[in-house]
Image 1 (tube, rainbow, N blue to C red):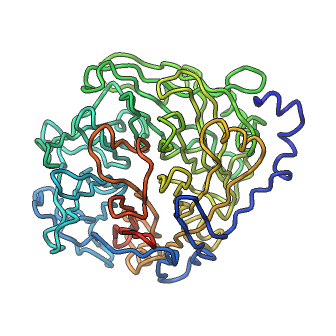
Image 2 (spheres, helix red, strand yellow; image 1 turned 90 degrees about the vertical axis):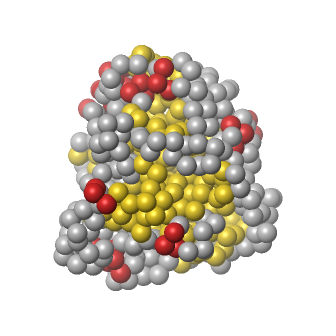
Image 3 (spheres, rainbow, N blue to C red; image 1 turned 45 degrees about the vertical axis):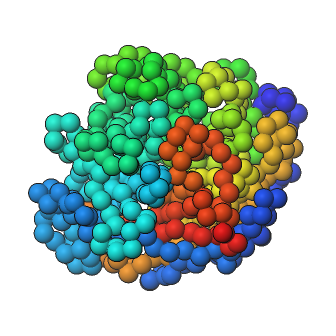
Length: 526
């Protein structure tokens, strides 16, 4: 059934009531033995709060901001895991404290039997990439600097997204900035997981935009999720960010160019929903329909640029080509067991309870295609957000059917709802055609809170009286489940995760404040 049929049947306007999306804290259960007991509520935004993790798991810190780097770049202040000390300022809680660098997304890889966790850094005077040696028992020897310079020895932008590209043997890094600063960079690693030369090389054929999410599919295509807020309207923001797919000429060498495509979504009438329309009318009925559980819309990938020339403005090119803008999509991941035919991504929304725009609270979306490289498919919302569950950001699969999604609602919405961020488990409908039917029949998944994030003393200081260059409340980021396989067979989405075993490991970062990265061990894990 397509979205046009649904509209004619009168379902779009009544579906919300018919399939009420009960956002609850009931236990999440899966046939694979993955069990999560829900945390009843989020932490209030008041003073210092401890993290509250589900009783179904335990967590251990593997790194924190004050840890020194084993190979610091002292001349540029890249000396600690979560601080840049170029100005000589103290590490925490003073009016002139050092710049916090905010380690962001995590990538777990195993090279030669050694277990490593890589991350890019989102804030600070310069971008850089670190590696945590998970086998090292001495914390002072655990974190290594992988890269903080480009081929000319200069600084490069701060980094939001990161993934491992097994075809090119590179960490792909994304800079979440508008053109010309944003874009994608590559840092090569050798067979031991060490940096080949430590230089981050810009990949101009992938364009310049506010990219955050980045993932590879089995064909070597690079999927990019852009997060650029639009102009203000009705207490919220107009849609202004796009989904992209880069189809390389040579999947083993992204410098050889290829085609950058952007996603276009078709209205029930058969015409594309474009930026010209949605930005002129951010209350367009299409946005309401798109965020209504049970609807489905046709999609197509449209080419917006080809070649290998200098980085071009991807956002402007997508708009000009008639692609469909969304309300701050941030990160995406392929669903295991679907042969890269299902891609799930988060949409943050307006992060304000004052917004009166449709889609203000975003959600989790699902793109289904006949293959990873297919040019057409369908999109549907897999989990709509609401005021209590919004600001969805990082995303990963814990099993084939259990999706972990974490919030980055921001200080403003924290205050409005008096609630800090949380992490949720969504137990999804079956994969494939049966999943399509389940969505259309209105069987919405319920989010189960596995983490109520707290606020450490450093973040509390920054939120109340710290310097403006450091962020305030803690944020949940870097949620990541992987077995560390660095081969093509280990691409995220290629294997069905088994979080109850010791091979598969789960990580997240309590960004801002102390910038602590945690490993979660689920109950019953070997």
